[in-house]
Image (cartoon, rainbow, N blue to C red; front, side, top):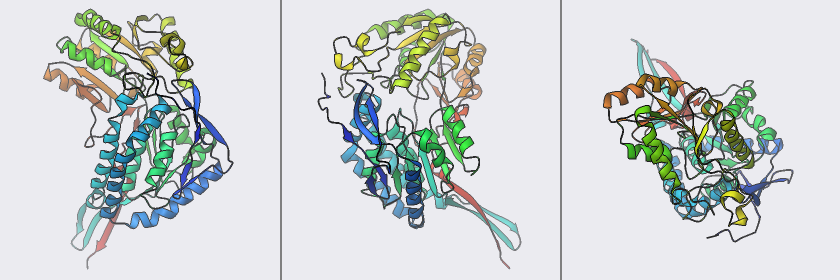
Length: 494
């Protein structure tokens, strides 16, 4: 079924000071539907002048917004949660067109977005309740306060912009900050529309959304003296560029970066659950484009052949992976989100073969190959779920983040060997462990070098748990206290 019946190319706008405006130059960029490779929308190509206007808007709104009580800010955020119910389907369809994440899987996100605004509303009071007291002497009393930082810059990735927009903006606003959102030029449409929707509730300037090329406006944003914190979900290369650009005007940074996460299956695991777990952790509805994707599958040698056989059988079932219109809920996997990433994933499949990896299944690319009966998608960025069998973790396809539906499977003999392979990477975002041995589960949790470890499940997250990484996977989390500063106060009593 083809649901993409409209050929209209609509233009979207920045949200600045509560108004929908074009960039000062009037120039635009094309937004590409990755399923077809065709232009479907236009977005502003903003300039440095637009950055100045946007940051000034956020700075002017800061005093009145931060002066509101936590209850009043919470009321605004709860109203946004209510509004999401009216616009959830619209936003999800825009994002599906923009980055290829199939709509059927994405339906749940409207519920998640609404709940994040409600959670942030409830957390607003934490800012005023997290202080400490100290008796410094018989006549001295000390205490600490939590205060908002000022203007927060949130830089979004192209794989999950609606989610990262929400979790960054909601908690920064709850803490009393105003916010500037910079979406990726590859997936900006849903974020631009989100900004319009939020401006119906929030006072002018409290939330601002500006699109443009990172190479054109990125350094200006992160080095701006009126930007008081930067939160990035993205790549290590972008984090390095932000660190350098902001060095002259030091400010706190949150970096949630990539991963090369191990998903480890021991011989005492429930095999069927493990098969489902390792497949769903990498061959996802958005084509493996998840920072925590379980892209390195480690299987104990005694069950290696059985696991591999079951995985091949599962992936050979035509119902497991259905390509096609991303708005059609019958389809289960979308395309790679943009042309540069598509070319990167293709190059890693070629590299895997050059390095001596054996393709267990998959390896084909291109809409003309994977959707031969659907010419509309022949130029789309489609990649078949691909698994390489390798004997060494030293290969580049084992060490470098591919960010697509491509995984490696590696055998191991002992718990110690599994741990050595798991930690043999520059990344440290996530890991999975499949075992029925509680002692082993605790040992692996303790010794695996990653910010998140899941046992007999994968990618389970919750508002009450932090989500962040170690090593090249970044530092910090998008939580309300991260968007505050701590002030020490001393009073002489007599």
